[in-house]
View 1 (cartoon, helix red, strand yellow):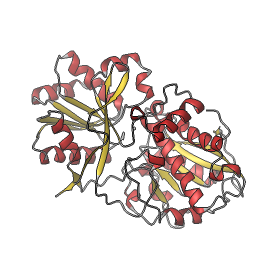
View 2: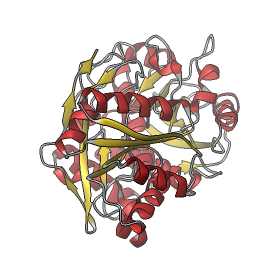
View 3: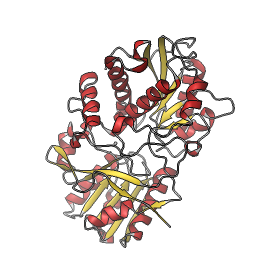
View 4: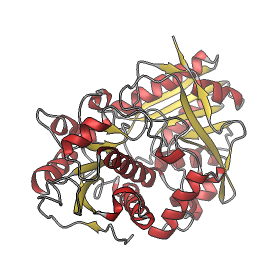
Length: 406
């Protein structure tokens, strides 16, 4: 979320199983080598984040189902079973959910789609930890930056000490001159907002109103709307959940205050298009995505869309943020299992992935996501605009890339 990642996630043979079942060879604790392999998935199943985060489960399920349908790699020998755990939309809940998956369910590996994983990260990487974890680093846990542990990044890892010219140059290309910045009150969101605003200044844009203390999920945005208007900002940069962004957009529209670009890092996906009120309010909003939007119709996006349509209730085949994160976590796990061997142990899987630099989610990412470093030469994002009932790619932003600046 701090890097503007939208950075952007079914009944099937793999199944989704809420029941607590023990591990053992061929289930949780053993390697592949045949039978059922249990994979934990940590996300928000209760609390204010549950409505959006639940899509992460169907994203992971769709990836496993498509893999089994294709008969690829390990699919002939292994059945994949998802075991869910609830982070209760809190850091303490994330710790409890992770402990359940590791100590009680004895899952072979874990997919993380939790904005609160930072509460569980120290436990998951504690001395002797052998459960590999796959997921995005957008929760802000420092442990994602280590390249010799059991955490594997399904997206680029934010480095809030590095400013890229990408965000500022994109806003400049859209005609922005004065930028307002809004974030939720979390370390990653606040730090992401700050490096984004520094990028604006590098591009010669002015910093207008800034609010970095919005409660997560809040729609009480009257003071924010007033602050944007009084600052005379003509652009808005956010590291917010889309519910809050939508409320701000509605407030600006009600005040008849136009902006040249309102950027949201979340919201791109089928879930927005399924809401007529959200579509009506969100007209003209720009959304960023770290992966190729399905509207570009590449072989990789065709595979993704087809799997979501066939194996979930996503009729449009456009993944939302959490749905995509479930897909990417499952895809990286499957890639690692194939590289290490279908009968690999947890330790084999970890050691193999620690040396991997060529996974790009079958072409969904513009560049591979390395596991040996978190220093990147480029930052690339795709941008789409909501027009009518469809997302339209921004010309020249497929993707729009930038480099680090001093």
